[in-house]
Image: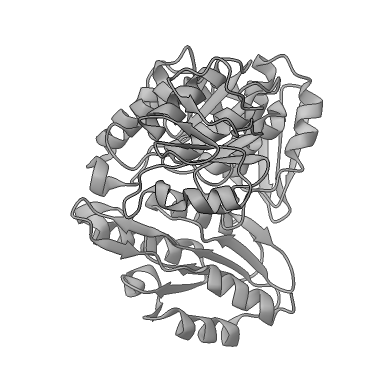
Length: 423
């Protein structure tokens, strides 16, 4: 419960303001249990939505306006972060996870192993602050996904979250328009390793010598006997057997991370392994959809590293393998060469390769300018027993010059194929 005793900032509290269970920066989520913080935005200030939040029953609004139920402060953003940092101190264990790819998957498996509260899809500074306010006093651990897309942002995140354990899942070509190079990516991500306990994946180990690693053969915390096939992944962690339905090597590595963290926390590892078997990652993140033909929905985001891993996972399946790839965002001046490299990998791992949008011809032998044309072609081609990987960046990327690059949005391809499959 968020009450007004011992606030870490000066505030003028309206007589009608009431404690809340949680706080949100999105006025549409405000309600009788959820208060609203009015933050400045790129296009509009949150103060414009204070009346809407009050009308929805928000117990209080954190704002600089003189309105009913206000917790009135001079700077709502600074107050939000100060409050979140104060609440975070009560948590027994906070794990912070960053990396170029694999953050959400690692977060899901780590949280399952630890029986922790974990961040939802959003991983911005305000979202993380609201999460810490909601769960900072819980006796359960917290797992926080810490994504960055600009220089200096990891420092802000570490100062806010103050993780007990810092994890880096990978270093790869992502957000290069802002971070400049792989060295820039590693430098920014590496800020999280200033905390007292740290772990990095084997893929990231070359950038951070001397840091404990997780993964398989040769890692500090290693799974043994990894087997990956169409049914999923299986391995041993010490004396514990782990079976992950419909999982790839990436999910298996995330499961090893979860078990390593659970072991360090003194939890029962067989019980943790059982929880890992039931993990379901959010849509669009290597979600396997079996049926007459299998769809691998990996449409949430894409980078050369993540596409390569997905193609490698695709190659483990029986039957005809089809790759459907779209543009990868924020790769900087070498994006054409990177798309060509990914297209070459697709041709190695898949029997049929499709590309759509910009760089379509580089990404696949069968190139389409628009998604509707692609959908028609796939519906005419796909057969029972096929396995289809669908992957691209889906969001909007902003360059330093504020030019918008729109992702392809291949989730519409997944939905169309599922509909045609009778689902």
